[in-house]
Length: 265
Image 1 (cartoon, rainbow, N blue to C red):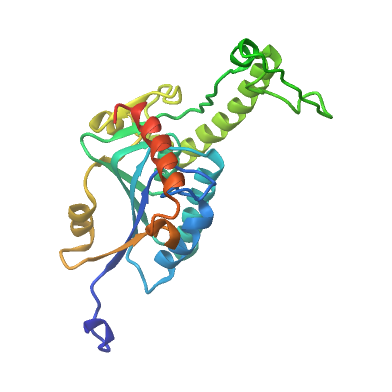
Image 2: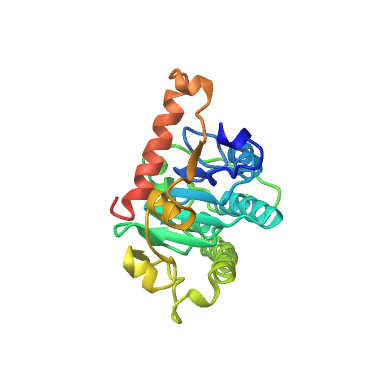
């Protein structure tokens, strides 16, 4: 009731936004995307007068565009409302997950957190030999010579691979610029943008994080023992909670497990 009594100072409040899962434009399972997170993030920054906003991050990455959109929304609100943002990494903040972490003013990690993977990856399969062995004829008609780029049912073309690498390079450059802008002089003077990953203190030593710390003790250290941490977490769609999207959820879990497996998680 103290916050309703005039002239009595309220305890500091820190909304804690949980960002867990793959980053993808499709609203599959617990996937993170700007459309799904927007109301949550806006509310966290706007409700009352937060002393700060904390992000708890556990993501192996995903869509570069969605990573950029989510991080940009967080930064816009932080700058508009002059609210400091702290990020706390749990198991992993890699690739797009690290992009989200750099939306914070300070990044704190566990001794075992996996951080980094500042790069771009694309993977697929080639089925042209398989369908040929089974007597399947591929018929494809396009207007525009690049319309069938990287078609998995046709032999790989060198010009398609070259074009893909060009696109990846553009995204990689954007990622690098973003990290350099956000981390600045804290970054070690070496190439940190090869897709390499670091664990715990090693990430701190490289300037990718600011220290070892967890959300509750760190927020108490900064704002005092009476700080109130208010959780903000994306809710699963109603049908998903009743098992109506079991197939999508299972596929999402498989994708996330495969992504985490690249980091030994």
